[in-house]
Image 1 (spheres, rainbow over the protein chains, first blue to last red):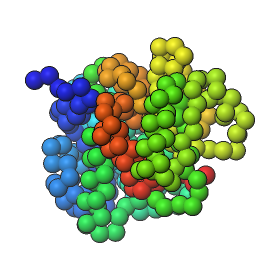
Image 2 (cartoon, rainbow over the protein chains, first blue to last red):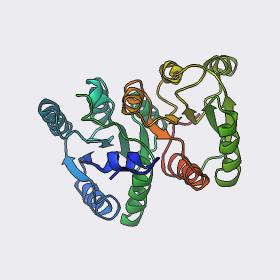
Image 3 (cartoon, chains in turn green, yellow):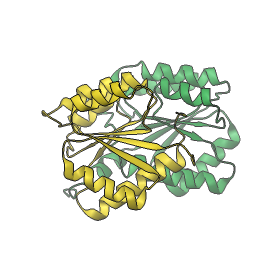
Length: 160
Length: 141
């Protein structure tokens, strides 16, 4: 079926949609999973708890030329701020198929310097982690509304 | 993110009607923001040079300005100029995968297409506000 004009991105975004969540804090990962279930259930989610694990997955997908995520959520404190920043810089210095994937930072920190260095290192957006489960769901509803329903996400498997 | 600072949105767009529509909708759905019209790469660069201390919160950038794809050249300049601190959102008529691809590769934050009817424009403005102004945290000016 031919998509309606202006709706093409919905078809493309949700087709083989994968999200990579890099989160070292287990209880936050639990909350994210719950929020994903109610707000972004069509999207396959892959979790990495450390920077090493995330890089291993990204390299594996790159080699297979298949299965790269369309969006990355990255916990800045992984567990230290320097771990998250250095991973972000590594992702952004890779070939365009990887560096083009938008990275949304999730962090408990609202420190001015953290926000500034995240954007400077190539973050697309910066979300301060909410306090309770209901707020997590609200944040993911907006994440869906913007990145999956408004934006044309990069078609990462288009030109590997 | 509630803030007392002004929330400036640069609109780099040669079509005056699109800008007027954005401004009208902003008045209704995003009154906290000030939309500033820049119709060409030359006026955009002149604006940046004459307001070096002023940093907008967001940039909406069209691809086809004075020529077919000069938005891409400007995209790289804006990215460097603001050092990544200002999200650059492509807002264009194109749904061309090559344009999507090139925008992200050249440093765009997001690629969006111009809505095709008034209702969708309202939703676009509403979402722009709820995501970039309310949910997301931008660097302090």
